[in-house]
Image (cartoon, rainbow, N blue to C red; front, side, top):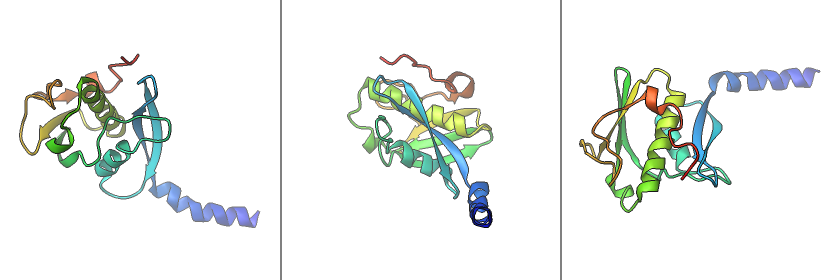
Length: 152
């Protein structure tokens, strides 16, 4: 009993200080699968992007490593800036699932954000690569669920 109590006392601060975050990967049918992870430090957004780029076993991710160049919050919006070099050569399917994974993960974990805006290399752009229009923001009310359920 005493040993269990000591273990509880040791683990209590870890549990209290860690926050659980939900990441969205894709299964073999390209359906969304959520995975919970814990993180207890600052810079959560960089952490989430790093984890999205490294899918868990049996899952797929269309989020490339080092895509996130910068980010900042403006009132209830998040502006994320991507590196164009890591986006080169992706096709329509990769481009759309990349957006879905990122937006679903952001809206699931940051309840105060109402919209997400995307820039490329610090500049506004019309398209993410070739297909997805990024001239306007992505609002929570449309993107907080998985818009492409059922896969391709």
